[in-house]
Image (cartoon, rainbow over all chains, first blue to last red):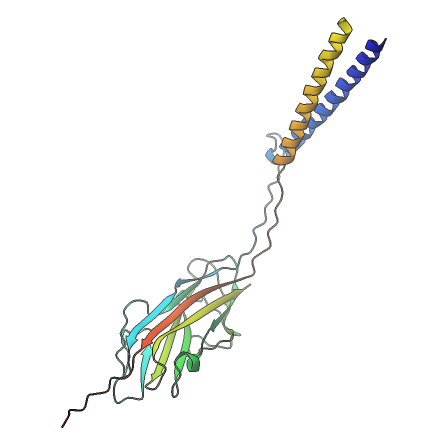
Length: 203
Length: 65
């Protein structure tokens, strides 16, 4: 009698397990149908492409090298696009500019800032440290509402200065160039001077 | 005696089927794609350096005498 009861319970257990197993298999088929589709049915492939802000200095260093103000002059002038200074003996031949690319997939508002300004970078009497921006790719920097016009020098600042609104994305329309103008007074601070320029793009 | 053997076999089958069911369920839960929705990146920055070395102005040495 006990054996019969045990048999009945066991049979029920097997049935339940089989039901469970069949349900699991059914679910697997449903999932496969969702992600693979069927040849005789229609499928839907849906994706969302997220926007990504991404700016990058493709040329990220200007090194004017070592030099001094020529004797008898109150200052020396350095234009980054040249290779030598005026009234000084700096000379440089490599990078003459910074170049910035919008390598993301969205137009960006571009701001520049520096960790120093003319006074803290060069010091002395009437130091000048200025920058300007030009398009490498035609129409890259749209600055209709910018506070800083293209191709016009303005003082380098430690606060965010808007240059482009927007800087466009896409190959062939996404690169701008930043040039610098320095006037080093004869009584400027001496030694190695470095300025870090930060470009910030906001979508 | 025979029915006990049958019960034993049935229980073993039950155990196997249950274990298989659990394994499949776990596999399914692992393989079910999780939709990851990333937040759009709306800001980025990049840095560059402008450097120079400023040497003292060379002062001519006055001839002695």
